[in-house]
Amino acid sequence: MAKQGQVTPSGDTASRLEGLARAASQSGARSLPPVHLWNPPFCGDLDIRIAADGTWFYLNTPIGRPPLVRLFSTILKREGERYFLVTPVEKVGIRVDDAPFAAVEMRQLEEGGARLLSFRTNVDDWVRCDSNCPLRFEPANGGGLAPYLHVRANLWAKVTRAVYYDLVALGEERVVDGRAKFGVASGSTFFPMADAEQARI
Image (cartoon, rainbow, N blue to C red; front, side, top):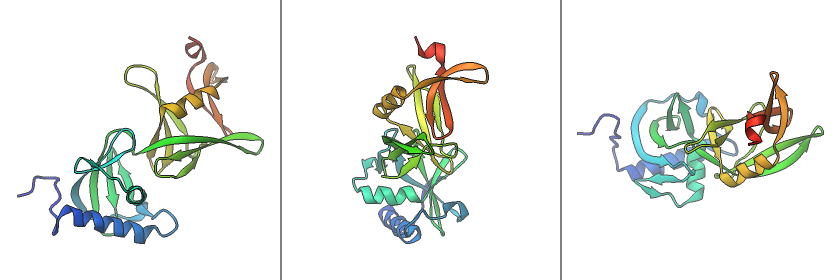
């Protein structure tokens, strides 16, 4: 008898994994599938985990096929604090250690005379950082800050350490709500990291 929350598939879990991949491939076409419109029945949890560095694991083994990871990332959905892979006919739960994506590269563009930052995720999506896809900075374990970039629909990418150093190098001081802040600008939006005085230490 399956434990509560466990998948009880008609075939083995590998077959379900292949079925999810087929559904993602068929639904995605050339653009992201409309997972926000899908509300299929919950079918339990699959033993899929996204590690803090963005690596996908299945049965504790890294998924070594980047196209498969890319496919699964297109049907990823967040509801509250839980994450799911969703197709038009089923929804399965997965685990995410931190953020489901990693921002692994940054480019500087120019738009309207202002600098615009664009980030590449570990699944090769490019995300333009602006008020719709903001940066946020959270306290990191052991001190310092952990930067995150909004990708879509409450799904975030953790900015890798190397890219974070590039961000800091672009930092500047601005007055926000009457207080001097250190942060980075992209497009028409300024994203504060810390109090300017604290950043000078």
